[in-house]
Length: 603
Ligand code: HEM
Ligand SMILES: *[C@@H]1O[C@H](CO)[C@@H](O)[C@H](O)[C@H]1NC(C)=O
Ligand SMILES: *[C@@H]1O[C@H](CO)[C@@H](O)[C@H](O)[C@H]1NC(C)=O
Ligand SMILES: *[C@@H]1O[C@H](CO)[C@@H](O)[C@H](O)[C@H]1NC(C)=O
Ligand SMILES: *[C@@H]1O[C@H](CO)[C@@H](O)[C@H](O)[C@H]1NC(C)=O
Ligand SMILES: *[C@@H]1O[C@H](CO)[C@@H](O)[C@H](O)[C@H]1NC(C)=O
Ligand SMILES: *[C@@H]1O[C@H](CO)[C@@H](O)[C@H](O)[C@H]1NC(C)=O
Image (cartoon, rainbow, N blue to C red; front, side):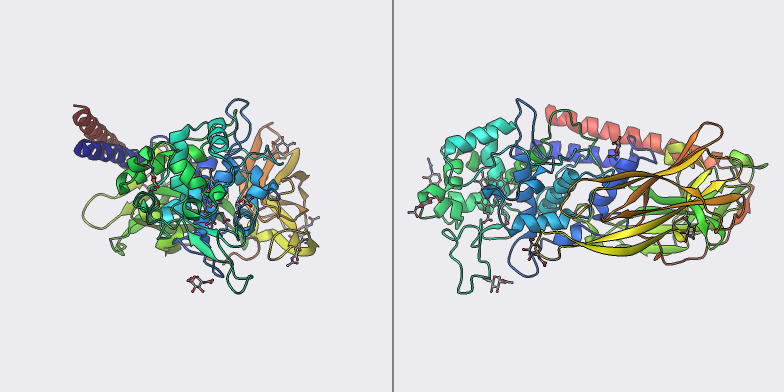
């Protein structure tokens, strides 16, 4: 029995590995997938601010014994807990940030989590996705299961219904709250046990259960079980009578909600999740369901899996009067292996215009301007899979009259085997347009004013910045309009998203160069993550777009000069066929391996 479950798990994990290696469901560019993938597996957003590193590895708040992971997991539960399956309202929708004055949501655990999450939402990642990612991080970071993550939650911008459970309520009330949210009694027992393996009850919130120490300003904590990790001890210590969980053993029997819940079926469910394996499997399942409770009408994305090779930060632009193409290739580096210093990574591309356009003839190549191996603690999700990242960053000069139509990469390990080609599943990475370009190095962000707004512990200050946005427009496209949609969802206290449209006008103080002239506009924003969708409506009636451009690096990007270019007559086709053949073979090997294992499991 155990044996066959093991094989089943093995089959499933092999299946997942095969999917990730081929990424048949992924094509660059997929902006929402790319953005969610970066937050989940790199822990961070575009400017490098790292959400995972606030908590990872399984840390407490620097100034207290509060478990950050415990606070984050509880936050997700409280946000979800008001869902009603009948009318479809509530669920993980971020409404909790407007509900912090309610008794069930009281205390600095919640306000600190809100501050942790504040800077991460953007056009592609909702505040409720950030809350779900934080729950997934906290479990993975503290040694629990990897909870599969999907994005696409939609935020509420006001408080939702009441009805988050509190310990003094009776078992019928709790059963009804979970039933309303779509979970039966057994599932309630599991979800509570899977939550109450991390974190504690604290004196500032429940002084009758956790008596304050001599200095009431210093919080005291009693953990639910004897370790801070995500483990089955919450169950075994309960069953063997050694538990110190205040919600089980408190003298005031009104408050022992965990005892009422855990024992409601004669401890059957608790016994069924007592082993480390059963606890991990059941918690993975119930917590995945918990974070996927969303209001009706919201559909979540496919599962966001780790991309084995990721192309990111692609930009055609001007830097110091040079027309440059920038891009990065992120590869996985197994933690138990040394980075291959002999590895040669090359970018290859074809002209957009001229005799050799669209890969008819000359291919140009260049090498990375910088190579960066990342810290393994960037995100618990990647570390737990045994990897960190190595980034190969390219900045190449491009002749603007030839421009660039598509690019791809070759990775030669110099081990006698043929180089691996990364070409977006065969098509290459296609540059969809060069008529409108964002120019970060000519754009600016100036801190302008400080607004005071009452709120969280710590600073109440909000900085308004004035942004000057510069775009380059290719001569001949004669746009009837150049404009930017500016978004910021990361605003202190989440009053409402910033969402505005401004027109960019020709700016003759920036001299035209290499067939481009410059447009600009300015705007004010008090949020933390302004992003721009810049559009030009061309004379051909087509709209060209620079989507989701980050502003965090305006002015302060370290400058790296472009690297040298080699021109070769090599046609890309033969090696593309090679990699396609290899992928097809690999896919069928994976397929039959999985099928074989599943078959044996079923027999
Ligand atoms: C009837 C249901 C539940 C009740 C009455 C309840 C009650 C409580 C109470 C009283 C605390 C202590 C809070 C404090 O001292 O500030 C707590 C903490 C916690 N709860 Fe629950 N809970 C319930 C269900 C859940 C569920 C389903 C989860 C998640 C899956 C969860 C996750 C947590 C976590 C992680 C903590 C620790 C927070 C920290 O360390 O800051 N709870 N819960
Ligand atoms: C954390 O708890 C330990 C043991 O109770 C205590 O000695 C220590 O002072 C606490 N740390 C903080 C920062 O409160
Ligand atoms: C037990 O807790 C309840 C709910 O907080 C409270 O109303 C009651 O006074 C407490 N009983 C005792 C004996 O402290
Ligand atoms: C369930 O477990 C608790 C804690 O060990 C114990 O006090 C209780 O008697 C058990 N209930 C049943 C019906 O076995
Ligand atoms: C922030 O505002 C709150 C409420 O208006 C106030 O109680 C608190 O003292 C302020 N904090 C700081 C650091 O100014
Ligand atoms: C910005 O506002 C416009 C007009 O209200 C709306 O159509 C659009 O969806 C909003 N954009 C975002 C990203 O929320
Ligand atoms: C034109 O560009 C310059 C240089 O970036 C900038 O300082 C100026 O504010 C821009 N003018 C307008 C009207 O946007």
